[in-house]
Length: 364
Image 1 (cartoon, rainbow, N blue to C red):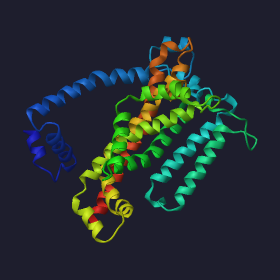
Image 2 (image 1 turned 90 degrees about the vertical axis):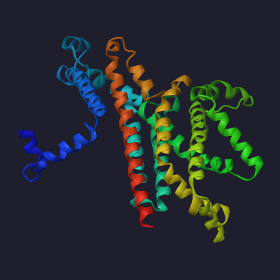
Image 3 (image 1 turned 180 degrees about the vertical axis):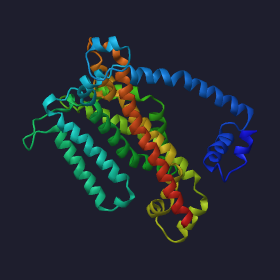
Image 4 (image 1 turned 180 degrees about the horizontal axis):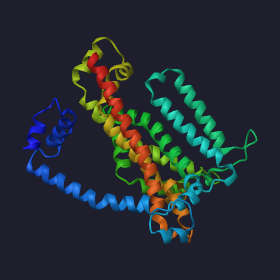
């Protein structure tokens, strides 16, 4: 009775009515939903308190393995002891400020490029200059910086390099492939179909293996291509095939009237695509595009097959220390959190971009 009067008095209990109505509508709207909600809450009750107990209450934040075993909780001392190896791999210890600055610069460039206020013609030159600075920091050999060859790169900087260059350079190729697959020229269309289906028909790990082992066998004697460059090229070509199918789906969703309207005002093919068709098509496929970007970011962990040590591989190396091997869960939790943060930011940005572009389309 008291509950009924409480819910029937919105003026006195407005602070409570909102959450109750939301729960009734979203969590207890039917018997099946109510059962699923109860089961989910029960699962959280079983999982969350033990996780807090292990990860926070009984955790050891600074200490040796013996102290971690005595505490019985998570051993975050592994992270404080091995964080440099996890984040930067086998990059020279005294020079690890350079990959740290490179990561910070990468994040600043990504944040700048994602902000619509900076979408100006000069942005491209700023990003190119930033990439030059990143290259100088990572390689060195000039300005008094010791040379560090890329076989000693690893950790988070290598993951960002492979994923960012893989995404940025594969996207223009994907757009060309998508347009070619819809071309009226049979030879162009056939070539694009073969390319897309061939690359989509093999797993990335096979592509990386071929790039590392088989590709050098086809090169002239005495000609070699850097291992990192081969891996980067494989990721670009592989990702472009998947992105091309996503872009093609967006192109097919555009009404034929848009093409006819562009033709009627005398636009050339490339003007029509650049000004009318592609902006609409890409706006429609933002979610699957970002999904593929996230997949590419996570798939960089496969480069261990060719001896490159990305973030996950560097974590495995850190856990190879016999003293800390028993606390492998903590190392993988830290790596997972780093992957999650970058993936979550990309997902949230895609939703923001969808809302912004959809609002612009409604205003027009």
